[in-house]
Length: 421
Picture 1: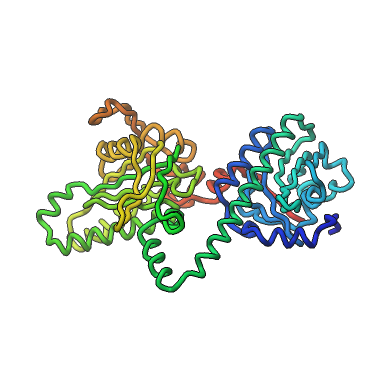
Picture 2 (picture 1 turned 45 degrees about the vertical axis):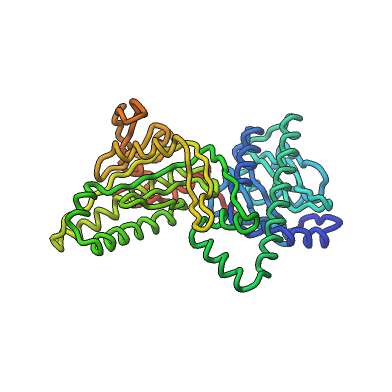
């Protein structure tokens, strides 16, 4: 398919290859800018598109399906936008000879409006575009166009930061073998992002995270079990359960923080931001309870006493950082941690007890039972809910434990059918 080329195309492609963006996974910083562009312009679709010689890669997207990660360069309006120095606004794509026959415009879902600002780096090369689109023809107000320009500059700043971080990573790879061994040891005990900060700066700056979800799991009657079970058997049991929890936590993109005796603590939304951390945390809790159910079925066949856990979840803000000098520990602090612990303590065996804050983050996707307000130590009366299961329309199993593609599409903000001809 024919499309125009910038006059500096050869140099532009060389510049694009200097950034670790094309083909890379989604990152929260870019996603938030795409979300903001959609909100400011009242557009159902927004995306960051990095353009190489043949394709456009969606580095961030709002309102597009998860499986749509790249498109041929000539099939989108961005091929024209990167030839400009300023925003390209097309009020009605169906009336513009350049675009009316393109996929998604001349066919489902029949997009009508486009505005794309080229992502121009400090050397003057357009790396891609920040775009918004609509299903209806429309005009764009001056203030909206100016906002898109400013957001595009923020995207370029993110790309520059990624490029500099890549340079730092390449420099680290030239270190001696002995230093690589010590780095690998640190990576085994700290989250990757925190370990890298510790290695490069020698310390980790405590950071405030405005929204995370904390999950506590605790075994019921553990003291009694410990008194009547041989230490080695008890440790082996806990190791088996906690190892299974580790796998579940990793699957749901949560971060395990620590175990204290029979208590297990993890958190979603840090150190890497995730706007759906509450949903992932509730899914992890349901899967933990399911694992205990399956394990107890096996224990029953062996005539062993069942093991039960309580699970408590709360969503709020925390401070996170590393403590210790020779033995590092990544941990979080704040009232949200205390509330999450109270949710676990006020829960019931075999149930997932969540705070009102968490409930409001996930109520569109899960079936829940309201418990009313319950008085807890040092916190007074708190509203609580039991998360029972995923809603049927979002689950691929009868028990409501495993999400389907409908949930993935709902979380991405798109349930439309897209066809690229």
